[in-house]
Picture 1 (cartoon, helix red, strand yellow):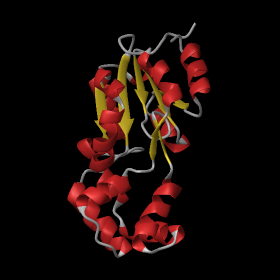
Picture 2 (picture 1 turned 60 degrees about the vertical axis):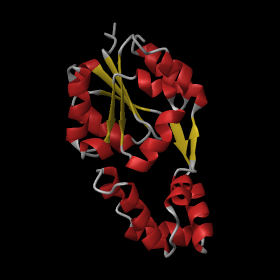
Picture 3 (picture 1 turned 90 degrees about the vertical axis):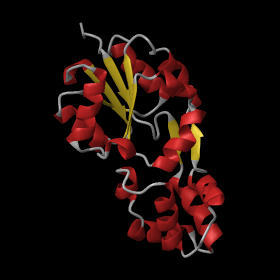
Picture 4 (picture 1 turned 60 degrees about the horizontal axis):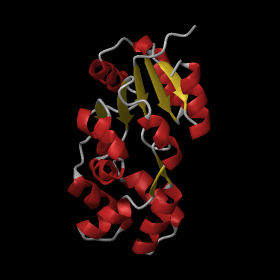
Length: 201
């Protein structure tokens, strides 16, 4: 029989929340007078996505970078609302996550930037009951780099094989598995439920 994990480490995007990047590009493009495809192209070329996720760009740095790439100057309040307007909460998965509170060490491990983190935290009250939030913009390392997984394990206080990790991106699951974690590809709330049961949770 499988020994249940001592820690469950969850990704944020497309696990606890959905993010519709197409919607983001449409809304930013519309505000800048650009097609969604052109907005996406300019952001891919100009925006330091990884720099933002590493915490090298703060809120104002992200605003300046995005606005500069799109050729528009938006006030911070309008920009911040637009920049996070593509998120919706994955309601179906929350009861199962809440059911893990107190039964295992529960951690969040996410590549994110300061604006998205600030927007989502109050919309996910369950995060206050997590044992740790490992956000790339706060620790300066991003998935799939080993360092960010090792930081999550340090905070969980467990060995890699004692932790189950769930992410929607195969390359991030593979990186976790390479370090000895029990990595699982997250697809749906129903599949997540079955995966947890198979782990003895």
